[in-house]
Length: 195
Image 1 (cartoon, rainbow, N blue to C red):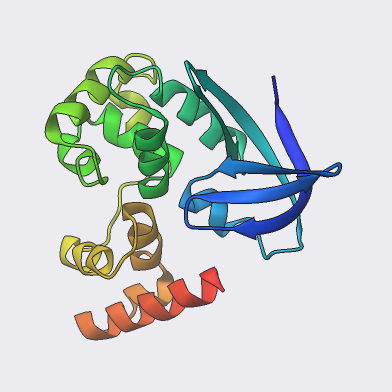
Image 2 (tube, helix red, strand yellow; image 1 turned 90 degrees about the horizontal axis):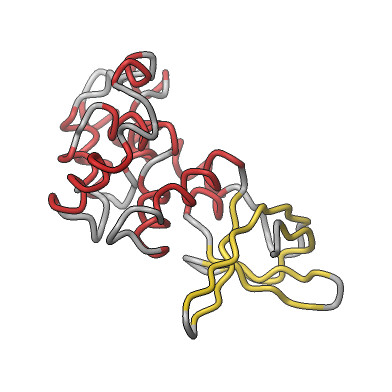
């Protein structure tokens, strides 16, 4: 079992990275959240990993933190959720936001993730709600105070649900007088964070 990889980032793509480890180049599929935290080509990286072996498929999945890793492993236990859908969910939501949506039984929010329809969202809620605790756990999770029209606008501009929430709740964005100013400021902060 490969529990983790530690090495130099050789290349990066929209859904995977290649890391040089002890004379080998290792390809690991990652969420956009992990990808945004890895730095530039040539930087040292440290990923915990999940080795996926099914019939003729062997793939390695990398995670920047333990919460994302644990959430991925729980997601792929759900019938109908493969590794691709699990990474999509983790690219759309933070682990905390995902757990909160499941505990609140918010199928509409879950279905916003690409490839997750209402039926699969319902299955996620059914199979994971008890494993991740009751709604009492979600009650302590922060509820977004950002207007839904701002969140929708930021998502239509390419942000994930988690990214849109984070940008919309930024103090500078919340202080803007008009919707146009909020969107502009959110995009500025988003660009500054990614590059």
